[in-house]
Every structure is written in structure tokens, then in C-alpha cells.
Image (cartoon, rainbow over all chains, first blue to last red; front, side, top):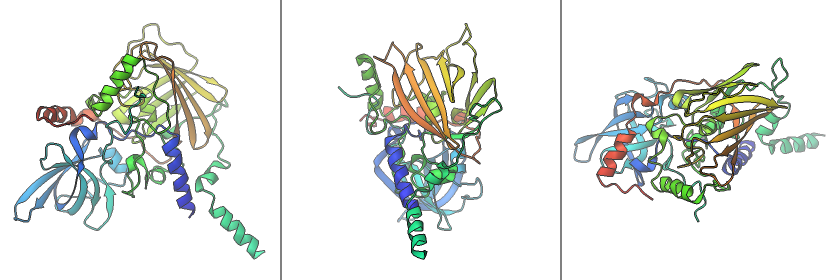
Length: 144
Length: 271
């Protein structure tokens, strides 16, 4: 109860008082389509821990038995570190995972990641929410 | 008696944990008696506690342990309730263009330094303040930038235009007042497209109101683009135990090439 109230107060305060955190260095909306959510399960083939964004690759076996390699983008290493990720430990090539996100505008096997369900069932965030960094719902100026 | 205890406990359970943090949280002070701002801070947050405490659930970018939590408003977004930035009519159109292009022209997409006050109000990356009696240094993880703020000093006569500007500070009571000039015109201030000219003059006021919180008030003045100075308030929250680490944006920045490729392919990016 206490925690709930504390959270609710914090939420209201954050919504109304602060100019809150910026969450990415580039526009989500320029590259990804919020109307194309995707959830896939597959085997991790590679994780590229680099700034400004970490990428990982997943082999996904289709119903026809064919394997497609998907690319997912996410937070930079320092942000992942603060979210509880440990390089070469939390997720490794060969791990079977489920990832949710949104597909790139070009329709290729490329997506923006949000949540990963690890082999042991733990869920961790790998990328920011849809719409991050593309300007929000209202411009900084009043539209006349 | 037992009943009174139970009632007291029930009342206590309704008080947010943050209220306890506030009580008795004296502002640390240096040998000169001034508030000591030294520490690792998170911009744009109002929540007390460690990085984990404040950023789980509905924390940074809505990330953390609750995927259903609403995202926090970004510093390139306009928070609800904030007055529109006072741009001159021609300049407001330019700001709107960037918004309609979904911030594809954000200078930080090229890994350029975010400038002031954007660097201060960022929440995804921590910043470290190191205070000495004569100079205050701020180290920003995002884009790996820094600011040096000599106290009771004058701006040099030969300031070169830069992304982060030239800062000098002084104390007004318990408030650190920082005067910043010498900007180039290549950064955004506090929201998508919020450009400025080299005439930008910023005044920041940092007030450590208790152990956990610095109130941040910034006034941006630029007669070439604004009709009047633009004032924004935010806060910095202490994040003990958090490290400022290395962030080298240019290491593998694929975004500008992706933007170009998608536009060439005819992707409908504009709102």
C-alpha cells in the first residue's frame, strides 16, 4: 500500500512538474513503426555491446523450417548495465529468448527491442518505449 | 493502547517512503559553509533513492521492471503543463518543422554534445558534480562531455563559440548561480527543434534543498529567436552508488545512414 501510494505520487509529480529525462540519442519514429509491434522467440547468435546502441541478433525458425536472422537495437552498454545486464553473463549466444519490440519501417528482419524474456524466465528491458526521442505528443512551441 | 498503536501504524503506512527520506536530510556543506553539490545525480527526476529504486517500474523511459509503466517525458519532448517556448513567429515555424520530421535533425543523432540545459536535464545517463572552493566541475556521461565552472571569475575575453558554452559561477546565499555564454548555434535547448543562436545567454540556479535534491531553474535568453527569456524548472536527484561511465557515441553510430536510407526508400517518416 505504502509503495503504491509512493509510486502514484511520484508518477503524478513526474508527469506535471519535471522536464524529464531524455531517453535516446535519436528518433525512434524515424526508423521504427509503432504500428508494427513484434514478438519473436529464437536463439541469440551475436550481441554487439557498443555505443550509441547495442545490437543483438536472433535466429528465428519459421513454420516452413527456414531460419531467418533478425537484428534488434537497444540501449547502450552503460544504460543496460544500470538496468541489471551483465555483459557476457545475462545473455549469451546460444540462449533461447523471447523479445518484444517494433519493426523497422523498411519491413526487413530488423526491429527495436523493448523487453527480453531470458532462458530462465527473467524479464529485463533492453530498449526504450516506442516513440522515444521523436518529439513526444506536442511540439515545444504553441501552434498558432 | 494496542488499538492506538494499530491506528498509528495504519496512519504511518499511508505516508510515502519519500516523506521519511525528506525528514532530517540535512544539506551537506563544505568547509566554507556553502552547500556541497558533490555527488552523482540524475536529471529530470523527482524520485528519491538509488538508481534502481527510482528507475524500476515507471523509471527511465518507462523501462525497469514494469513494461506497462508509462514512459517518462523526455527532454526532447514537451511535458504536460509547460508553457510553450516563447519563439518568434518565424522561429516557432522552424521548431515545428523539426517536430513534424520526428526529430530526425536532432544534433545528438550525429553524436554532437547536447549543450545546456539539455545535458543537465537528461535522465537516462547520470552526471557527476565535483565541487571545490574555487571551481565546480560537472562530468556528464551522455556524450562524455564536461563543464568547468570557476567561481567568482569573469568570462574570458576571447571565448570561442562551443557546444557546452563558457560557464562562470557564484553563490547567492545557498544557491549556485551559473552564467553561461559563448555557445555555437548547433544544440537544442529543451525539446525537439528548440534551436538558438550564438547570442544565447543562459542563467542557471542550483539549489540543494535537502540531501537528495537540487532544484534546477534555468533561464534562456536569446533575443535573436525568442520574444522574451524562456524559464524552465527541473530537478536533480542524488543517486548514491551510481557510477558515471564511458559513453562513446561515435563508436558505432548507424542512425544518420539509416535515416538517409529509409528516406531514399520512400519511408513516410513525417507526422
